Amino acid sequence: MRPDGNVDRFNIFSIHGWAADRDRPQGTVDVEIIQNERLVATVPARGVRGGVMEAFWFNPFECLAYGENRFEVRFAGTRTLVPHGRATLYYDVHSGPRFATEDPMARSKARWRGSEAETSLTWGSVMTGDSFIDAVAEHVDFARLPGQKILEVGPGYGRLLATLLARGHAYRSYTGLELSEDRVRQLGEKYGDARTRFVWGDATSDQVETDCDLFVCSATFEHLYPNLVATLQNVQRQLAIGAWACVDFVQLDPEMLVSEAWFETKDSGGAFVRVYARAELERLFTGCGFEIAGIASVSPGRGPGGEIINRILVCARNAGAPVAVTPSPRPAAPRVAFAEVDVADVSRLWRGLRQLRDAAPFKPVMDRISDRPAYVALKRRLSTLLRGRGGF
Ligand SMILES: C[S@@+](CC[C@H](N)C(=O)[O-])C[C@H]1O[C@@H](n2cnc3c(N)ncnc32)[C@H](O)[C@@H]1O
Image (cartoon, rainbow, N blue to C red; front, side, top):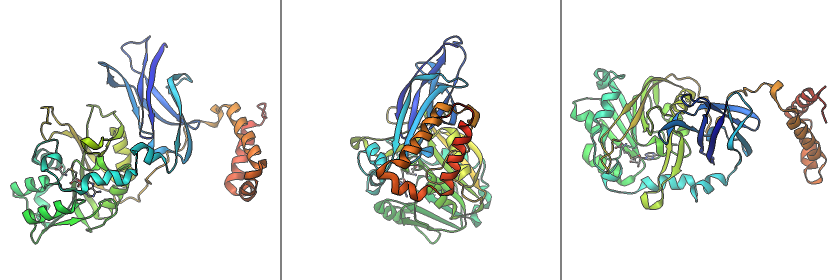
């Protein structure tokens, strides 16, 4: 193997770079993401970079531990680092504000609270909800809609509802939950009736319905900071078991490998944008208790420069399973066997613990935790690992 590559970006939402094996110009490689000596993901370097399939992305956000996160990016199956593939990300209360250059949650919502031209909500022009509703119809039986309850988050100017109505779909009730007070007023004036209402509120925390059968949401979940988890969990509590959740997302590459996030500049709106890889969407929806029935591309139209807007629509059913994802879910059990752990690292850790135990400022704390089961178990594990291997 003649490994080549580079890690170009390390931040709390993106580890991104490229990797290739120059001995196999036609082949592709995988990279391993190691966090604090544990393998947390194996990701393919198969995104297009300079016309070649070499780029990889990994979003570390959901597996960040509070404090120090030592990351390494290695060529899969080897201990060879991808060049510049080592960095430490510190995750603490200051990380979000540093990333956003102010309070990230407030900033992500401020973008949407106002009253603005309809065109600035959907890629520079007013669009229909036709392609979205067509794709939803591949899964959802609209013939049953007259007896059913619909929930929408972020209806904007009512694009999806307008298509449903234009196609003559009746429903038992429709509730649109919207962050902008002014848009709620305008939508109520235009569409409000005995079955159709709009509520001013925040989908991340507000519950406005129960037992809904269909949840729809377009061009909104990518703007939820830091991720969709809290909102999807909150939506799930308002759905019946078996209900459909149909939500679309940004699609930047056909294979959906790209995973990154950023805040737009203030001049261009200031929104938080998170692009999810397909694997992340599968993990997050499943973890929130949904069963994915389909993931398909949809396009609502063209952007200001004539480019086709690509979206990815996830259609999933509420399985009612207990919610398994926390806002910062920990990765599954480590896949690195203890036998593979570098003994030198373990010795350092062991020595560090002993120094910590004896260091004056920490002593009172260490005295308090030193008989805690977790600490005792850690000590036992470390001494087992070191036994007969030269130890310290
Ligand atoms: C980009 S616009 C899309 C509008 C509409 N869904 C469409 O596709 O035409 C995003 C919409 O979601 C709303 N929104 C953003 N965050 C929200 C939240 N946390 N709760 C409710 N609505 C939200 C915004 O106010 C805005 O109307």
